[in-house]
Image (cartoon, rainbow, N blue to C red; front, side):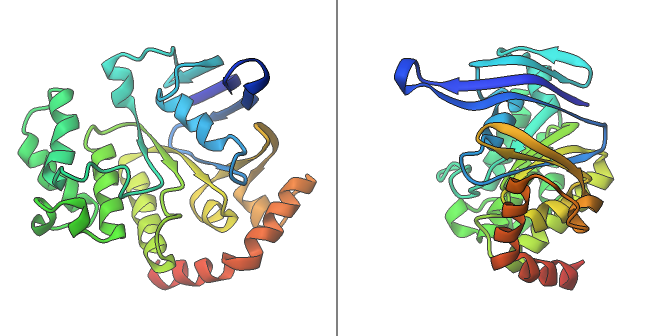
Length: 259
């Protein structure tokens, strides 16, 4: 469903040039959930930005559903892949209600029955009709992220990109959102890429993962290897120690409590 081959992304020119992503390659099968992990600045968000069509200065090859995509995307190609961002407050327009937030993409893509789509979209993410005409500041962080997820799914994409979708939320709310995403993935047959610095989240959500450091993939694992601590690269070992040191067990308890 997703093929990334020799992807490179740089910003700036000359002495100020930064090579954010360097020769990254991976593939994600239909219905698979794939993780990109690494510390801040490792290039993982830049990779999903290129896949989503948010960046227009990249080199290499990206193919979605077997079709190569370029820097300019057709409307149908943009409908195929949607994205949920890290900050649910920053990604929602402060002067748009949930109704307008969900109606706008449906109108752009000329979908019929927009009112019904909005009601169903809210219901699918666990929000009632009372949330429909609320503004972002009238919603909790978890509710805002549910609206953002509903906005991404209202076009019925086949691919969902998740850029740290729970890192700005409390641990208990993180668990609710992660369980919601797991359910939606199964119900809709979604192919997912999740970006995170948290190995516990990736182990819970993803079938396979790639570890990124300084713009490069240094190791690729499946979830069973991660759970067994079966990794060899020194950076992966360091990342695991850092993740285990502050919130891995806490998140695991919260996930178990709500699953």
